[in-house]
Image (cartoon, rainbow, N blue to C red; front, side, top):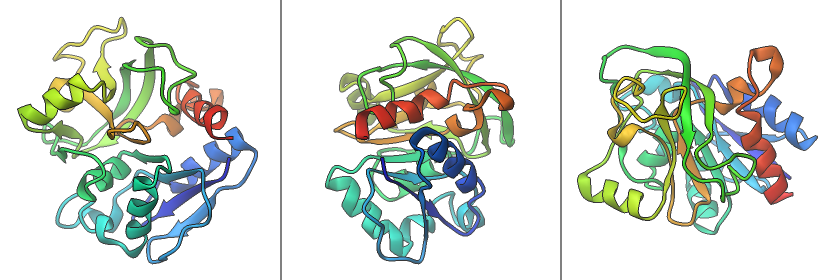
Length: 229
């Protein structure tokens, strides 16, 4: 599986993503600078976490207009899987590849901690190593992570099974207390219409190695390898 990681000014999880991808695939991914207009032939494109352009204007707003994003959008619409993590999720919404927006956390504070997530689907390229309803532990680190969409969009996402993960307690119960940022419907990640584009605020790459105190995130990258090899 050939992967490319897009690097923006202010990205700070690009190397984390590269390390996890190399461990899963056995190949060093291509690191593609935001100013480039071309992306190498890739089975997967990753938009990593960080603070692209210093979150100037709005988180992900400027990155969405980087030269490389024109090619990302083209590849995504042609069916190439695209994974956006944290700031990458924000960029995907700003670029119109996913609906909704990521707003300031309900607490108005930056939050950095591990959270519990419930896997809503296990039939996508990203989740085949998980079981539907499985509770996993990922890390979050964001200030603008509250997912918002209008009621019609939420109903469409729910009706089409496009919710990827929800914030939950350790028993898988969806509660307000388990929602760290005020996201509508406890949404932590969503898919596009075809399930090929995934955006999520939590960081699977930060809990993908036992040395980092957890491996729940590794299943996502192993799922991709199994599907896209």
